Length: 465
Ligand SMILES: *[C@@H]1O[C@H](CO)[C@@H](O)[C@H](O)[C@H]1NC(C)=O
Ligand SMILES: *[C@@H]1O[C@H](CO)[C@@H](O)[C@H](O)[C@H]1NC(C)=O
Image (cartoon, rainbow, N blue to C red; front, side, top):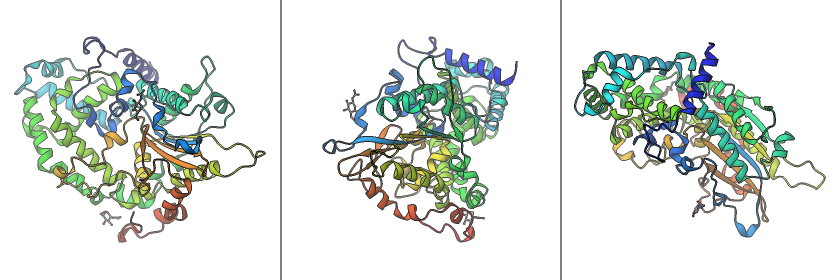
């Protein structure tokens, strides 16, 4: 069997599996207690649990344009992360290494009499193969299809069947197969039942994978170990070491046989088995709530310094996407004569967590007073920067432009919940001109070439946000 076919069969089997009767109480999905802490590997349903009961439920009260101004939505730009996916090849190698270690050496420790250790030692199969390398799983397709249906229910005039059929809606995606598959699944959701699939999307890595094209970012952060020093320090720090020790003791392994990477592989295995197969994996029993919080913090630290507010270039690298979005909004908000062509009703952009985080940061969102570091874990429990909530699988940032009596208004939603613009907190859907005024410095600047090529990185970021 070809690997692609094999993958499709595995994904199909996985999608047929849930809800696994053996693992679930009747009617209740059996969700690991640590499921809300998986960072970028969190399921969308952990952020919106009502979707577990009904994946199509929408609540129109999230649209918050002032009722007195008789507003109607005229444009939607949605920046969406791909859905649930397989582990990448690197993580699959780690999973195998971990699984072999446990099979050969785990002797069992305190609290290991519950059967899960026996399960890990003799029955659990590392069924992941390297060719699965980050591809979208069936569950991920469902996430995007259902998201499309919910967005159509929220914006029936924008994502109408006619607008899609007449190609008025723009579809742009990153070139990665998991993104292309995601944007196809999204279009599946918008298509009439029975219509033959015709996919209309363009690949645009300049917009959606800007991070790998920005030299200042690649040299200054991605390849620069000292830019991620806090992450490294935390990995060696006391909180993380305590988790390694606890996990080693639960497995009955000498502590030196486990590394933070292997502990993380076990943690992510719990997440993958849940997000791919909807099962409660025996790997989940290795962690209690406080362990999960430490591992979640480690992921957040990494995303903060590598993709978000940690370095100004992280967010500035998303300038092309920022400008693209505001150009679409400008066009859609412009006054028209009745003879003018109607504006683009919607623009659907599919990318990565690495696409969304820099953009959200550029907009000034989820910025805490004190940056998270290796040494302030204890004071960060209430931080806003929590990737489990911000960029789960199928995460989405929606820009909704309304036509209102006093002029166009703009509202932001993150994962289908309203979010206010920093600096314009008084209103949920401020006037578009006020939003433009707030971001004037970016609209007039934020030049990709200047930010990414033109500066001497040694002297640090040139614009503080
Ligand atoms: C919709 O959301 C509002 C709050 O935003 C809540 O009061 C209301 O009960 C929700 N309606 C449904 C049907 O869930
Ligand atoms: C690497 O990161 C450090 C810390 O952010 C910074 O001071 C240094 O300039 C960076 N190096 C390069 C080559 O950009």
